[in-house]
Amino acid sequence: MATDALPPSTAKPAEPSLGELHNIPLTSRPKTTLPQVLNWLLAILIFPFGALMANGSQVLFALPVRILAYPIPPLKRVYDEMIRYTKGAVASLLVLVCQLCAPTEFSFTFETGGPGAFTSEEIGNMVLRDEDGHFVSLNLPQRSVLITNHQVYADWLYAWVLAYFIGAQKDIFIVSKDSLKWVPIIGWGMQFYNFVFLKRSWGADRLTLVTKLAEIGQQAEKYDRPLMFLLYPEGTVISQNTQPVSKRYADKLGIENTKNVILPRSTGLHYSLRSLSPRIPDLQLIDATIVYPGVPPGGYGQNYYTMRSIFLSRVPPPTLHIHFRKFHVATQVPIGDLSSANAAKLPTKGKADATVESEVPESERDAFDVWLRELWMEKDASMDRFAATRSFVDEEKRKWRVGALKVPVKLRNWSEVLDAYCLFLPAAAVGWMFSR
Image (cartoon, rainbow, N blue to C red; front, side, top):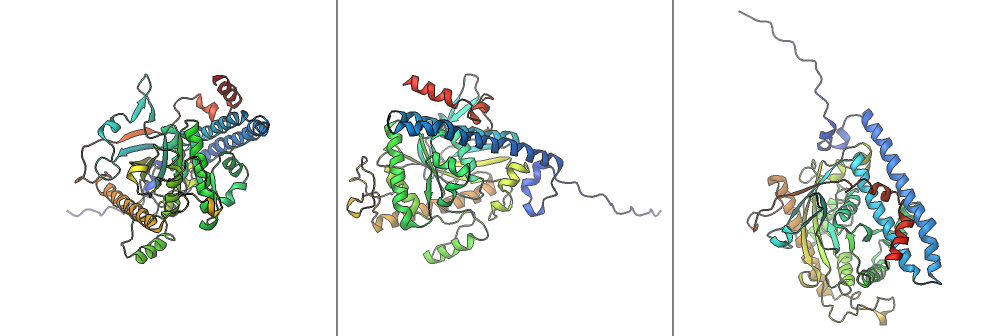
């Protein structure tokens, strides 16, 4: 007996949920919804006000102390501690913005077999917890240079949040373009934070970088402070515009180009390590490989994530996968012969006064360039492995199996909201003075 054919369905396919949008390229996402508009308003209230409070505190409270420190030198330490407090406040502010406007978690894994592997004892002692068993911090080296692959402009923000979980949020230093130093509020704050500003001309930048880092290293060692120097060896984010440049560089070297990263430029990192290592004997190089979910192998992160889409439209990476390697700079990284380096002496512009840190023989430059390039090619391969197996580690080299450590990005306690807006700055300065 014949039956009538069912009419074709006219129902529209279901719209993807907010938690699924990170898998869809930005140009193909649906229109902004009301909850996203409300999130815009929340983010605009939280971050600009906090940044203004930090910069205002620097100008109103810290700057007068700095002026008084010229006739009264001991006040320079008070000024430094006030600036460190505001730098830590910005880290708390960034964590707060993530917590309220762009919820995510970090998934930490650690190399156990290849170059930069951690020992089983180091991994066993990696997590510090409070009396209630809650996560407090990662027991990673307190004095380090952090290098990562560079995929989106939010990378620097997540790196500062990472410093919060390591305990180095008050002592993070970042390289920035010289043109940004006069941007209102943000640029002024970066100057107070003693960030390194470069003009993208190595002839002009070499002595600036070397001298600045030598001074920062001296201060960290003298006052027993943490230090995290953040550097992106690729120099820019991977994109459809920068990948062809990397391809031409690979062709020039006669090597295969990478797919998930662009080939690194070694010069800035090499000089940075040579400047810091003589002044910080226990300096470590932490290499982090970061994967954003939703970005396909060989894809470009900025096609899926922007500062606007993450923090305003509330489409963050649900989990940020971070794989660590660690190298002791003086013994495991080929930075060259620094046996004649004088840690007490800062590099100067005069040729007669040039230090060994700022004058690198060509053979040592070439050796470091090869080492870093091989590390980056292994990084590229590990990202392919992760896409295929959900593991960064080469199974043939794995010595033991360690699960991922997942940490929600949120403040340790809500009292830190007051820190995020620098409300404790005067009290912190007075407390530090009395503690001396």
